[in-house]
Length: 183
Image (cartoon, rainbow, N blue to C red; front, top):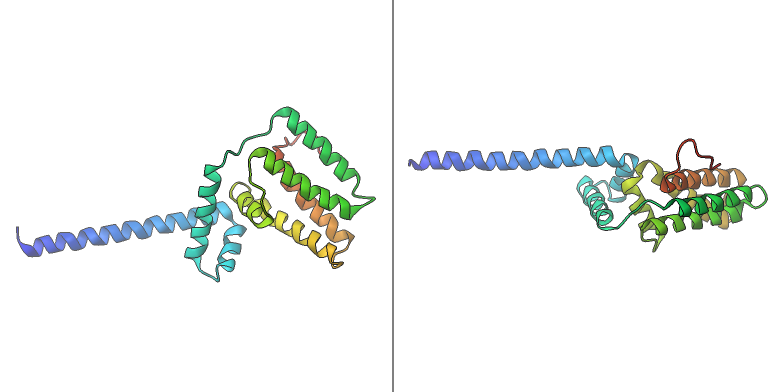
């Protein structure tokens, strides 16, 4: 076979491989952007603007969650958590700060019961971002407000916003049906 033809075939094959890799990366980036939404942008910012580093982190999160045994709660456990939430919510008017702390702890308890590791807040938020990307920003905001309040830098209205953030994540983690009274 003519060496020129062999060379041309090799070049065409290399171009096809490179094009395939680029298309695959672009599709992956689009999927991550679509899946994670605002969390994608937050991770790009945290990675100093590097989309490739952000995408690598998000893929790492997906792999981590895939290896965990995340499971729905049995009905009895759901009912117990719902009852606990109703007590936490009822106490908000009299003691918002205590209710926020209890709401944070209860969200952690639900996560643990479902199979999420709950070692530290950053890891919990990263784990939640995989299956609940629309709610992780609420969770982060609620946690931030609670921390600011402990420093005397957040008021009751801020605590109310934090409580709503915790509640939305609690509902989602619990798998609360739309017709089931929780609030």
